[in-house]
Amino acid sequence: MLGYKRASVFKHYAPDMPGRSRLEERFTQPTLWDAFLGYLQINGVAVPAHHLNRDVTQAIAPSEEIQQLLIEVYRRDTLVSNICERLVDMDEGLQEWRYRHVKMVERTIGVKTGTGGSSGAAYLAATIKPFFPDLWAIRSRL
Image (cartoon, rainbow, N blue to C red):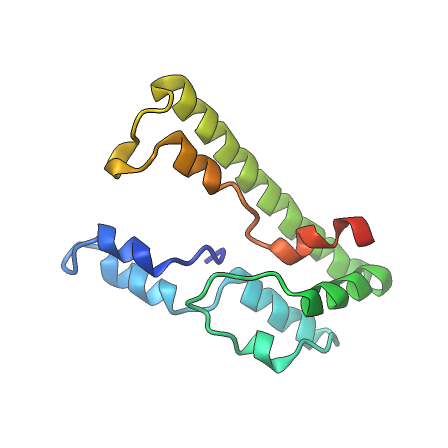
């Protein structure tokens, strides 16, 4: 739902595993970011159609075009910019949780292989990235 979509995740779930069909369904549905872009459009922001109609099975990629729109939103619409900030708050909180998870794993197993054969803490550290990259990219331009 937050947009961190990877088709490779399905290899960890057998086709008959409970919950897999729900996961597959969710994978094909729009993300929170897609809903937010629709909200911007409803509130008078001219979001380009290719962003509104993107392939929702793909991860969210930063867009200079969207960043320019967001800068204008911050400059002219306090209500919508406050919603942007709530998304940033949520994103930051999730990144903080992931960071604490990495530190707990490092403290517990060090650099040993993680569950499922992952590289452990190194893999987890690589997951500390924003769900809404455009909202982070504009920080220095506001």
